[in-house]
Image 1 (cartoon, rainbow, N blue to C red):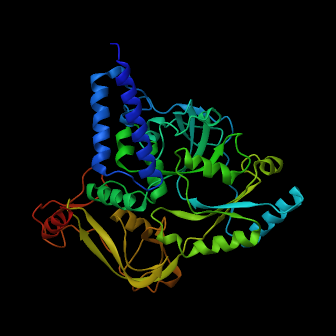
Image 2: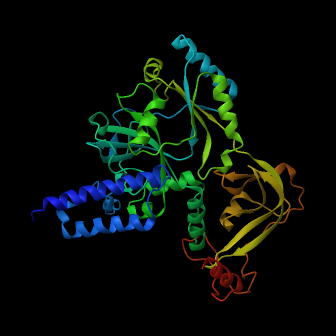
Length: 440
């Protein structure tokens, strides 16, 4: 079918508008139109593409969800290795890093300091401005092709917002992460279904991008921050990030250009107390030499760039006492053991309860009523019992056995084959009814 010129132009114009509004909404968080107006644009594009299927192309906003993969993931060889960062918890080691930079450059280095996002490193490659490949870091030399899932992430442009030929063929790298609210909701759903829980948002993001079905990634609301731009157009890392943000890439706004190591530490310290207020996980700061010419001179080791270091914040662990272990019945009947704790402050908030997930986990950690335990917020999100302080056991601690009857309605508890969950099989159990109403 010959497509009329006015239809081609109409499709091109609508796509351009949708790409722009996706950028304003998902990257800048500054929408210019209402959800209704956006939906009408998308609906119009879908209607035209249905009438003229020849207008459909891989970079169309309607093509974010593709077909399910069969046969597993293809391997991708990185043209430039995706190295991991050397990291430290020590301020003294960061000072030594700075001294080495000064010694090898013969002057004070300029640094860019960024948040260390707790996610999964990926590479995105664009040809003629269109996303053609997304891959995991893998072992640094070879990763997995996850393009089918990368395309579902709305903050990743399917086409860059520029006609500049110098940057239409570009590779950017970043960190895919799962927002904390999404993680909480996902684990709540999995717990209700009796499925194993993700330990933290990073594990959840990694598991999602390695799923064969792109619908899973689409509905799990993954996001990304770009932290590396591989292009000869720019002379400095900071300038490259600012420029990449203007052509459609989501860059974390919390970065700072620092003239010396004192400014670096001031900025790092300012985030220690603020990190728990972010809607995503971060576990430290990344310090990079700014100028690409300096980076090239400093070089790399086999595994790490010598011009960058991660200054990590230690996870805050505190001790408290397990006053009781109660059984909680969810809307699907799953019985969850929950530790009632002597209230204690962890990572900025007071914690008095911590889920023990299931009876297998309870047995593995051997948590008993009366135990002194270490707790932390898993991924800085969920209060978690890390381990028992065995040295403080007195012999009076009480072990919790797997119950045979529901503690609420007295009905029998069942365990399906291959499930870790134990369930109350009475759908009229008051706890289940209440939980279903709350969920509704």
